[in-house]
Length: 325
Image 1 (cartoon, rainbow, N blue to C red):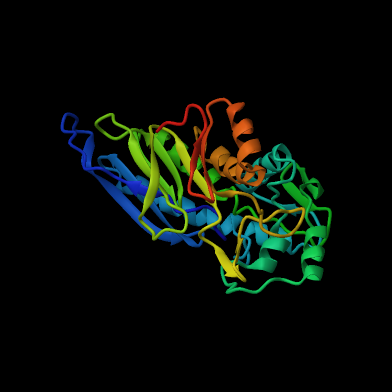
Image 2: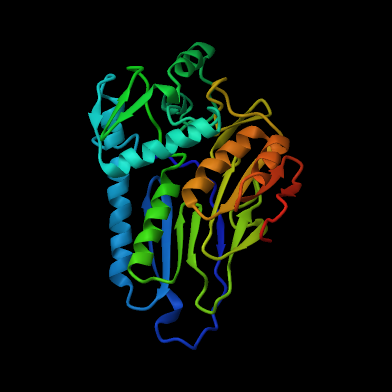
């Protein structure tokens, strides 16, 4: 599954908490590679090895369902069904419906049927080649979330050569599912990082917030431009500086405009969203990036319990009114 979100830097400060035997100063951690990225899960509650192992297993199962490129996955089967209805699992149906929700809320700026266009640009392997205008036009003609028909546990792509890519929202959904599972198992202090989609379960064991660094655009990995303190919140960034190439002085990045077929071209380098749900942060970060600074800031100010920071090409930071700095 191709990833779209920017790696968020985790600053895990040494914990001095000593007053409760049910938590540890040093978290149990699992790190692996899934969804074409590195994922890391930290749990501070003691005796959590089996829960961590189950979280990794759940991620592996989600990849087998949601990946666009993994042959045999549910999304792969749907994309290769030639327009026929395909029966899918409850998880996949739920994720597709979530993607359709954000496709509609964003008025098509975020569109889960962008797969033909994403495959054409192929930023994972593209070393600096522009697709032809004809091929871009053809790919754009296949995009349209309105042509995804969900009925019960079946999904049909009404445009036969259309295809779905859930990479723009899948990690957010998966992070939310992992958090729900952990809470059901009695976990109170954990941090989930699915390749930059960061979600906190509660706080640090001493009650303080997790400090999450936000990467400085185009800087060496590990350099933060600012940070955000969170408890029980999600942090997701969309930006133009991780999967891109430069040609004749112009940067071509992976956040594609479904209407033009080319990368969004505005004054932004990144948008970071902080809210309760990782799924919402995922969908909103792309939507706000597509809107640009002025419209994006105005939009987020009207959303309850959602905050954002926009970074423009001159390196300036523009915060929503209640951003938790």
